[in-house]
Image 1 (cartoon, rainbow, N blue to C red):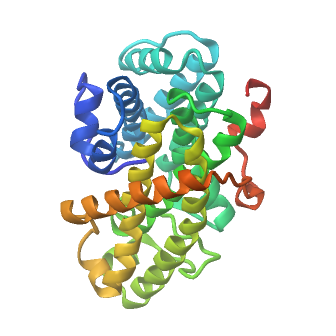
Image 2: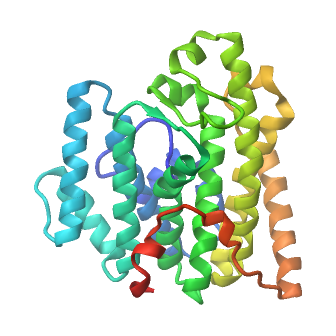
Length: 322
């Protein structure tokens, strides 16, 4: 999942990275077994390290170097040849986690290709482009987690896992419009309610841009609901403890968007929305209750193919690996 905040320290253990920088995921991760948590934390650390290559590149020179680094890492994964320097550490981490999962490695390469897009000014022209981006930085994480958590009936589980990643990324982008604008990025699609926006106008507090931006935020949160619903439907394919953990993570993250809508436009631009510890606990208990009720009904729903219309994913490119 694409994250925001300060970068993680070199050599920092995966569980510590998760605890410090992915508090909602760390909270939900306490329901995993020790081995499952270690894998999930290592994957979070790996993906965050890749993401930070783009987020921490602020000058043109740094961005050019980051492009080269990401290209080298992608080539190394393709050729199974360790690169030199710090990239070698990232490569080894990927190999240790995903070497037995060709589909997961394919998803990681999709992520790397998408992260490279953040090294240039970002403007989303339409929702198809936005959803493709959300797949690349977060739906891919769903694919990798599904493999690491050893989901059953993987071909049926994976589309739902992609959708949960997309839903969470939509929440991220809806929450972080100003933070992204500071990096020269506007993810709200021009063909949606937000229309065409510029980072400068958003940051300057232009009333019209802020109003349009708020409309786009609401639209994005509403769109995320369909993807959260699909992601929830896929939980049945996970082992029991993983099912509990991902259910809590999904509901807590979804609550961010709901809180944004409850607080309204004025509060949105004043401070970043977070889920308080008390609310997080209430949402978690409710999520586990809903999950237990659903498990007693024993209903499995086919994936809604319309959610992936126009998407280019590793499931399409690597079907033979399923």
